[in-house]
Image (cartoon, rainbow, N blue to C red; front, side, top):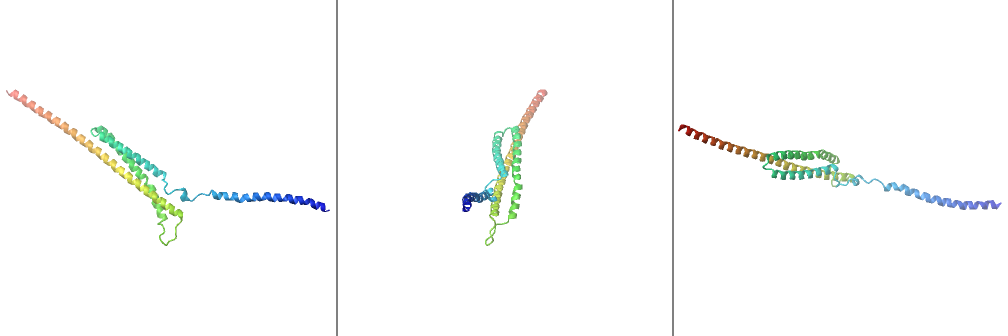
Length: 212
């Protein structure tokens, strides 16, 4: 009767590998559960660097750079055409159009500047001495907005400088054309006066001939 009981012993021994096989499977579950924590999204202030330039601001920088180059080109052409009224008239049209473009760049930055001012007002001033510190994400946002506001102000200043230069060039063209017109009118007047004097002299000569 003890032999049937002895036959169950191998079954118990065979059950141990099943326990051992279950143990590795259980050990892998914590590792898979920890993986999502490794791919967590970083804080907002890390995804948007404080020194990152917004696309709209980058576009404004490029437009002003092109406007500066165009203004230099037109200035050189005006100097070469100072005796050509027709060329000066065409150049003035181009200069005035460039002035409008420069002003447009400056105006395009105003909506974003107003947004920044409003957001900074919402954030308020940094905590003073003895006050509880604010969240890092708030400090990072304020720093980024202040930097962007400074960059926009610099762009606006550059645009105003180019606008002043283009206005002066346009006024210079007008003055040059006015001088050319005056000189041309004066020359025509001198010619007419000389012809009038010649006509008087001829009339006097004929009168003397007739009176003889």
